Image (cartoon, rainbow over all chains, first blue to last red; front, side, top):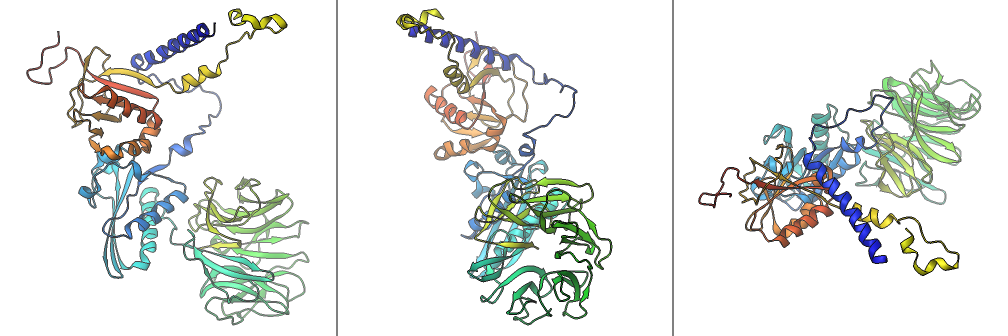
Length: 427
Length: 151
């Protein structure tokens, strides 16, 4: 009985198989049905499909070629605009091609772009030739750069070339030669300020390694940050050797630099308010006047400031002009929003911030249209976001184990720096 | 489907009345759709003596991914030879094969069936669902001088 049943199933399968086999051979290619005209059609697979397929074989001529190419591949993967092709699939004869390409060998593996490079190494000195080929333009390079320097600069050269590739392909340069600074709890009652390449290379301590240093920001002189003393907090920067640049009664903390001024939070007048001072710390002037708490100023495009205030009850993000005028609330969802950070170079006025709703998660808001986007979704605690300088990525700390970057939609989340971190700034 | 009831139906248990479709679906999912096409003119530089059959002529499209196997069992993607020792990893990781889900194979008539099948297996693992077997249209233009004319 059983056998007869399975024979039946096999027959059924064979029949349906025949049906599908017959179809492709007889059907015409241009038989695609027009899409039905009703409402919006969401192509759920289109974001993936539109990724630019790029092949980055190891640079030739030196053992540095592998690590160098990996810097490029990592940039391209993290920026969420590319599909970096698996080098195991490559069929091109790399020896023969040298710094050029034979286009059919690369279109056969699906590449739309190919990057070739060659390193001439002489002791510590390197000369790096880089080429971008777009298969749509045939076998001539569409971008060509030569870098000279020492081997320690190779990563920087690679980031720079990746920036130029983005400029060439999208019209807007990348920001891969950028750094992230952050605070880190290093022990009980101990915090230090760190800076690292955005991709996690060379994580280095900026502060002195004792006491509490926190709330960093980039500015002239390097990384500015706040240091705790027995009676309050003062503001200094990495080149000031613990000199007090902005000091005064109470807490002076959270610097952000723009308009040729340092904006910071201070309690010198009794309440937490935002102040502006010259870069040498002189001429400190109060720019918020409200009995509620005003903290966390953050410089934005055009010298505008975002900050957090409780003047409407719960902590919310507000923006104002550099002189304190034009105060306006910009977050209206959730009951606790903090740590705002601007997109400095985008088409839309975007702010990233931490929202507290049960746990903490990262959100963005377009302050012109009030469109919100949730970047993280209850994957542990996620907080303290910062946009990359080109706004193509958002970094944030996650309790998943370090600093993560994602694209501005929250996709492609990858950890770039391990360990605890808080209050990120990216420049 | 009473016939499958057998002895099981006596103690109140009714025989299962439906086909269990799971194995059927499984079979369908691993199916590779294979179709034959005759290619009148191929512009790849790889010389292959195609088997002669009657098959519908293919609208040849330069954009199609073509895999050729020549008489020496060398495999070519487009015009580029894939080294034999890297054949498997090169095809399995090929982004274009994974995305196109369609590939045309031009295998020389004298390549062992076993070898062709080995390549098919890799292609299928790489995610291809439609496999076009390219043949020489019977009675078409003679390719090899001195070859016996097709009937």
